[in-house]
Image 1 (spheres, one colour):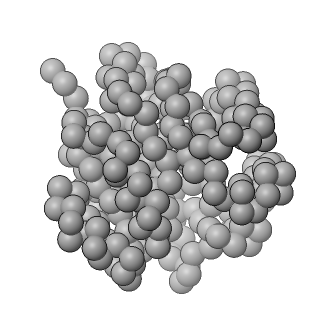
Image 2 (tube, rainbow, N blue to C red):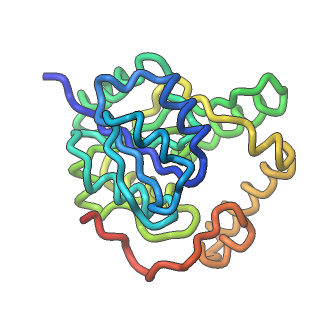
Length: 240
């Protein structure tokens, strides 16, 4: 029997990117959930036009928004998709493949950037090596997880940054990570805006500091784009 994946997209004032992702991907075999902040007026037209989407209001912050979306999900698998990342054709086949192996707890797609730059290819290679040697995909690889395992773990921990790294670390204690060769295509706009070397260096610095014990609350000060105001209470975000 076919499984039902629930695709959960957190978005904050990025209606144009979300609209492109919705238009470029076939979600007909999935439950589609968009988790946005109540004050995000940029989504008004899209909300009115797309009645097929489950629209969920949540406090700002990816961990909050993804947990809020997961609380409404009915699918067997949860696919956490960034608004500026596009899933490949036949993406649900990867979920089906992962589902056949009971030892698999979660999975991800291959990271790809929508740029012809040689720097984009170099960054893609670095991500492939990170996933191959450390089993550590990031959220822009469209992480997918069995809903039962996600709920048993309590969902995403409330972290202002590195929430995907924390989730993957906990998931690896629950089972294997399935790596699909299909590419999830992420917009290169932020690298082009911040500089290929500068943005990559900042990512490497943040992950190095995180694994050396620096708290996410301190790390977020180095990544202004991910800062959340006001600060929600500490602790794990409830799924209900």
